[in-house]
Amino acid sequence: MSDIFEEVEESLRQDKATMLWQRFAPFVWALLALAVLAVAGREYLIQQAKEETEARAQVLEQGRDALEAGDYALAAERFDEIINEGGPSARIAAHYLARVRVEGNGDLEAAQTVLMNASDPQGAPFEKMATLKVAYLTADTASMEELEATLGAMINEDSSFGALARELVAAKAFADGDTARARQMFGYLKFDANAPSGLVQRADIALAALPPTETEPAPVEEASADTAPEEAPE
Image (cartoon, rainbow, N blue to C red; front, top):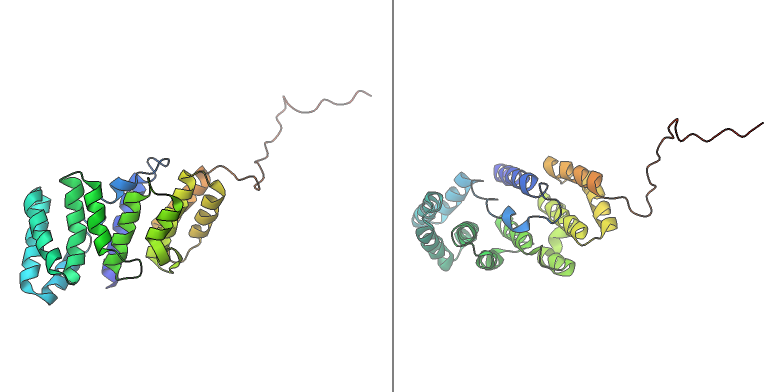
């Protein structure tokens, strides 16, 4: 079980390091959701589906193969079939279908709807992952209150998911001009035991990029020889 968490976290670190920090303001929320689970945990996903039924595993595999081949119509058909049947496999298929909606149709709203139906900030890992993706997709247009409502209790959760949720809130605070809150949250994330190493590095980068708050002393510049005070006449 630990393998899937490591793969998901690694995928998140790679995608976020590439997209989030290339354009720190404004953050590229929507693009981050394209490939978070594109390759992470493939064997785990298929194995979990096989435990339910071999038929569903076959359909899931067909949909995934069609997605990788760029046959978005067939991929959507296969993933919709699994989602309509319900069960744990439906939550897995929802992640893939959301990718189909973005890559194949360019429809962020449809992707958001799919993920919202599979999300739960207090649910299983793939439900929490869906919640995070919804938050990424809507963070650019949502208010801080709406973003926090989407993430729910995950913001205070002592886990890697909670750390990622707090990073998103900190980034939103910066985008809204709330530098003090952004610095405070990024400061906590630097020492968060649940934060993946890539997140800690990003928090360090953010703190270096953020301007100091009014309560922080401005850096003191050493006086040069040209600006040294003149000696008083004797």
